[in-house]
Amino acid sequence: MAEVERCPPSAVSGHELDRRDTPLVIAGGAAAWPAVGRWTPEHLCELLGPIELTFKSSTSNAHPDFRQQGLARMFARGQAPLREFLRSITVGPEPERARWLFTGDERFLLRRRGGQTSVDPELAPLLTEIVTPSFFPEPQLHTVWAWLSGRGVRTWLHYDNNGCHNLNAQIMGSKRCALYPPSELASLHVFPLGGDNPAYNCSRIDVDQPQPELAGDLARATAWHAELCPGDLLFIPAWWLHTFFHTGELNANVNFWWKPERPIWNAVAARQALVDAAQEAKLHTANTAVATVLGALDAAARRRAEP
Image (cartoon, rainbow, N blue to C red; front, top):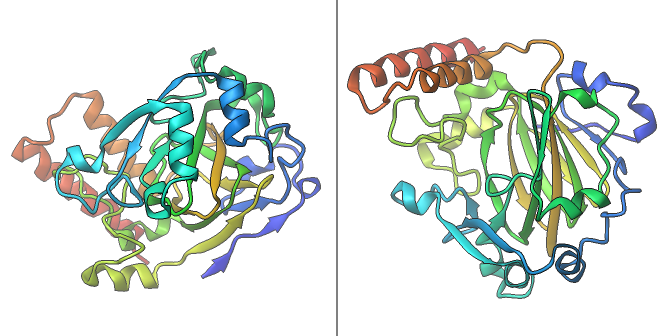
């Protein structure tokens, strides 16, 4: 186990994060943003108005809820007015608060593709109270997401399949996180390519209640740990696996993803390249032959990750 390094913003110069291959907490890197400490339920309702939110809906605190049987239950969604959503995650019974989670999967905040920038018009007021960090080349910005959750949420262990570096700004609340380098891919048992579960970037391991046959591999994997407080920025290098446990009464985060300036190649990147190629070619993984080929290539990539 390793603790993620913490440093002040003054210790991070220019675009050096793009060249960094380990996580970093920039302590207080977002502390001066207007949003930090201000995004209370009352302020968010005033800022955004009576909008409707679609959100992840779990029967437990896990998101996605891989403890359930069937894809429909694992990836269930709900819908409610913003005020009702915020009340449910902050005022309701504590076990219930962790069952709803709003992320950019449901509605992105900002997206840049091919030089064109798109902003969700109903969420746009959030952008007036945050600042695009200067720690990465602004033209490389890919996506900005907002996250809202209550105490007890567990985001399932996964890697970001967009190949981007991630700078996660803690606006409200607090979180504990565990991060694993791409070299630990073989130990973390991501869902097999060509299998029934299409969440190929997610681990099969329930880190809160590890399955007996997988617990040993999880325990032996090198993990980096960090705790985030309001105003902190967490840098997650591209292709690192990570899981968060949300500990604040109201947790609000904004994630900035940007494309690395230099190519990054490792077992996780190779695995995702295979997934992307298969999807681009519109291969049907239910086909036995395709599933067999994908499974064999996946196994080869995992073996390359082993020491």
